[in-house]
Image 1 (cartoon, one colour):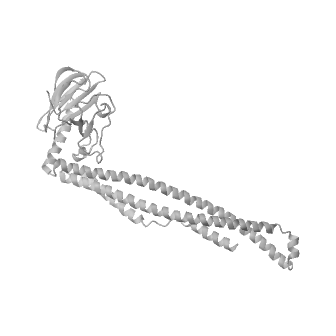
Image 2 (spheres, helix red, strand yellow):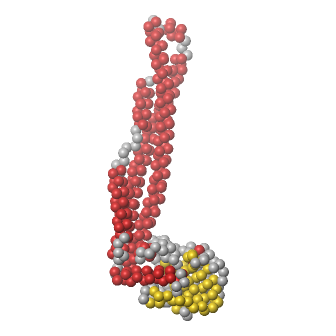
Image 3 (cartoon, one colour):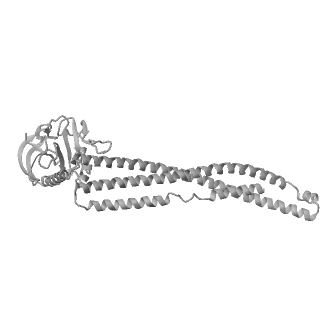
Length: 387
């Protein structure tokens, strides 16, 4: 019996011990502090004057922030994996110990059962006297009390064993979630590094080039807002059919444009629409590495495209890598060009054609507008010649 109690005492103490304080806790606190400091630096940089150096500093800080987040996730993973290893060792020890205790307990119960079959009269007459009889009787009662305690404690140990297994499973689920987060963070880091390289490539790491791009972007945004608000000077041309040629995009840099492209924009009831959901399938490529900068178009409509296949996208609709470089919030259309140099621009739907112009960055930005025959929709085609 003493052997069983000693084994049970060890088992209960083994289960009761909680996981040790993680040695990574202090390191995690340091990483969190680093992350918070970098987030504050990003906020400070966003309020600075827009220069190439400040933009690069902004991107570098974002990269450092993502690297710190990756490092923190890796520390968390290391700590949880160490906890799982500790739990695995405990569970293996508990399993062996419980099996052995169960075997000993069964033997003990069998012995106790046999003792219970002894008739008290027989026990009395087999004793060396009344005092010996009382001693034996008290011993039997003591054994029974110990057996009940062993049974209860063994059940409790088994329950704790199950709890340890549940804890291990929860830790393993945490590892899966952290690994998924790590994959996303590494993808974000790759994107940020690619965006920085794209910026350096576009600007040739030259402040004057950057300021020129910035000025054109700001002026173009103001011009687009003016066109949509009806502030452009327009002349009605007449009816056009779907697919009819209505203009040619300028095959070089032009007013408020850093390179050859058509800016295509759509409104419905005077509210901007994402053209991606209206245009149909096309042979698309991109002016950037989409494996690093995953900004792509998934056409969801049936309209023809305003330029011929194959089509090269230079900027999509929405928040893009380029908008953060040039510090404006949203790109309101799709920038595109024909991959083979075909500059023809087509009406995406039948309607009434207007030729327009608006002042932009010290020059004149030319565009055409098609007032669609249905649904109170207008499509706009910017940076064009009227031929």
